[in-house]
Amino acid sequence: MSLRRKIILFLSVMGPGIITANVDNDASGITTYSVAGARFGYALLWTLIPITVALVVVQEMVARMGAVTGKGLSDLIRENYGVRSTFFMMTVLFIANFGNTVADFAGWAASMEILGFSKYLMVPLGALVIWMVVIKGSYKFVERILLVACLLYFGYVLSGFMAKPDWTEVFRSTVVPQIKWNPEFIILSIGIIGTTITPWMQFYLQSSIAEKGIKKEEYKVSKLDVFIGCGITNIIAFFIIITCATTLFPYGIKINEASEAALALKPLAGNYAFLIFAISLANAAILGAIIVPLATSYYICEAMGWERGVNKTFREAPQFMWIYTFMIVTASLLVLIPGAPLVFLMVMSAVLNGLLLPFVLIYALSLVNNKKIMGEYVNPRSYNVISWGTVVVIAVLTLLFVTATLIPLRV
Image (tube, rainbow, N blue to C red; front, side, top):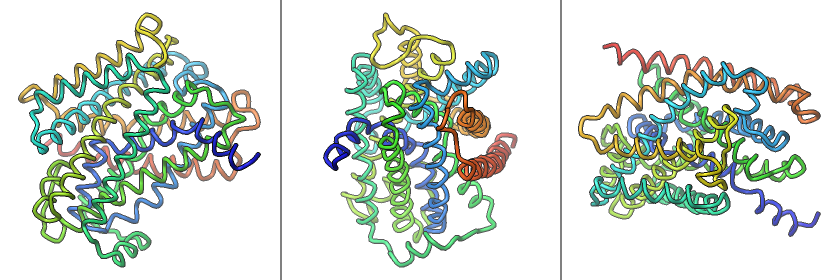
């Protein structure tokens, strides 16, 4: 195959891997990276290397299942493990993803306010626009919008360079692990893993590959899309940490939200860095508010055997469209209600995602090693060693993260 044909083929299958991985850097993810940089400087940069490897392993596996079977992960779990276990998992995932959606709309509201706009105008407007994009658009149209939006993430790379970090120190911190026996350091380390590899990603990636119609013959090219997406998402995380580590950490400025990081950048790094950071946050939040409800609609409809897909109309796939609509409308309204329990919803979302992730990965591994389902595309032995090792590490860290998160709730 000529290079020109390879490029054309790649462009035809490109999208699911890049979009899924990039949207993982939503409002809550950006907050985690910002807080990590502001509170511990460059000390957590090294964690991004093993996290990238783990993300590539997990995403490649579920993408391969989507290409080989033409089905989503929920479909395969229901067919092989029954409706009862699938229904339980879908219920918990729905609650967790609703919390994620609330977090994304809260991030959108905060970014709009620091840019000088009223959240009472911009939240309903943002909700209406993303609802129209999915309900009225085709899969190709939605995918193109999402790919363009992914380009705006590179604003964080610009803000990182504008912060003028000590690149020697950055490089040393990236390749030489630092461990501080500090509870906050450990929780943030686990939080970075938890915000990078989430349950909804696995369902959305496999569903979008199946809906796009990528076949197993095209998967070698599609795999590049997955690898590029995983690489980009952690490059963006790298520069978010650098920006906050360079500008906020030396002054002891502690933050709790990404919007606070944007505001703190203004006097320290200038108006341009502030604007780039704030606009990138707005983009990440609204992108997350599109994809997380969409992923939820996909996996619930797959689990229940209902029609689904962006290419469908309200009449053809009413459950799919109503689930998406419910999440968008309810989450956006909650953000506008004074005194709404937003923090509680976000914390519970993180806990539920953390509890479910090991189970989702175990299901995925058992399915990808089933020869009746995957044929010759099952995992090789060496790949299984890496995959199960990743699952064990994530399970242990998830348990620590959930425990550490729940303890403050009891106080």
